[in-house]
Structure formats: structure tokens, C-alpha cells
Length: 239
Ligand code: SF4
Image 1 (cartoon, rainbow, N blue to C red):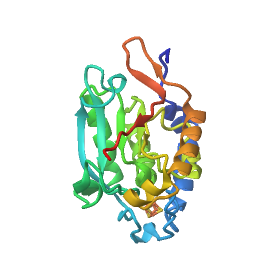
Image 2 (spheres, rainbow, N blue to C red; image 1 turned 120 degrees about the vertical axis):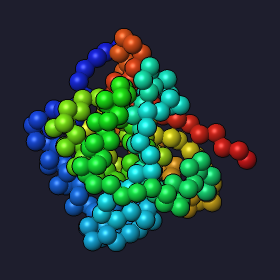
Image 3 (cartoon, rainbow, N blue to C red; image 1 turned 45 degrees about the horizontal axis):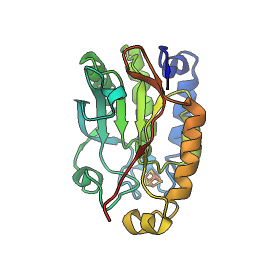
Image 4 (cartoon, rainbow, N blue to C red; image 1 turned 120 degrees about the horizontal axis):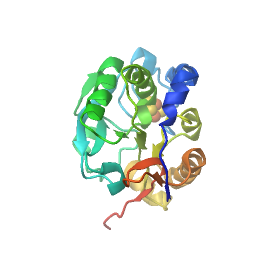
């Protein structure tokens, strides 16, 4: 862990046009959706739905300053959490079952998502924390472009279950400053039994390496707030 302070990387990506390029490339993946390792192949641009039950638009279940996250993310004013509805992993032990499995939430436009980011920043939140973002990264990037125009300047956190497509993650390089995946299983039989994803251990190993390649170790500022880096959460599951 090192001490440092710098501007979030997405500001540069927005200024030099890289963000726009990434938005186009990542939306193209929705036509035969391969955003995550499920690779459903459905056309989400036409609102078809795969395992994550999400079509063209993102859905959000809540947007709040969160004080229950890891200490370097929470600080004094909280982590600005946007909780996405639905999920591509669908663990049978999910603590947010109504949101991930039952789809509790509402569709949002890019403009509405951008406004949520700005409202969290205006509340003093130290970052924007996208919870379960893997199935909605195109929508997040589009909204980000709008939010930057409205003055967004706090770091973004990619808070996923560790079941991501490495090729999709590569497109996110230079956008998210903090990656905070869970690590759930070493055993593919347990991964199959609990979330029908026997490839989880193999996928997650590659995902963590790619995340670390992009952002490195955790960097905090003089106030103890995380500015960039990888933070892995290990889940301890009951037998
Ligand atoms: S993001 Fe959704 S539709 Fe796309 S591959 Fe993953 S689960 Fe399937």
C-alpha cells in the first residue's frame, strides 16, 4: 500500500477520445452478448435477455452513500454506491437475492445514471462504487461520458464477483481506478453447485491478474482514502 494523490484515469480517457472509442467497442459486444464468461450470444441491443436478464438498458436497485464498505473506500462521507439489478453469476447464497435473482429495481437511462454519479459526488462521497457492474459496463461507460461533462472527478470502483470476461476487462483499462472483486471458490464443484459456473476458479484467477496489471497495488492518499489499485475480498462461506 502506498501513499499518493492523483486525478482519476477516466478524465484523461475522456479528454483524449479513448473513452468514446471504448464505448463503441464495448456496445458492439452486446449484439451477440459476450460481456461476461456466460457468453449467452443474445442480441441485447434488441432487448433480448440472457442469464443476467438485462436487455439494452441498465437497471438500478439503489444509489446511496454507503458506510459499510472497506475502510479506505468509506472515509468520512461514505462510498457512493450504485447497486445494479440482476447478475450474471447468480450465487444461490447471495445476500441480495431479491436484487440479483428477482430483479428488484428499475431501468435507467444513461442520463439518469450520470445524475446518480453526480448526486453521490455532491454528497461528498469519496468514489463511485458500481456494485455488480459486469453485465452493464457499456451503459456505465456511456453514462460516465455524460457525468464527466457535469463535473465528475472522483475515482470509480469496479465491485464485481470476480466472474468477468478478461477481454471485456481489457477494454476498461484506464477507466476504473479501483477494482474490488470478491473471491469465492477454489473448488469448481462448489462453483457448479452454488452458481452453475464450474469455470469460476479458473476465470477469477485470470481476472485478478488482469485487474492487477491495470491498476497495481492499492494506493491511498494522506487521509487514508483509496485512490487506485486492487482490493480483493475473500468470502468465507458456511458449510
Ligand atoms: S452479460 Fe448477461 S447476456 Fe451477456 S453474456 Fe453475460 S449473462 Fe449473458
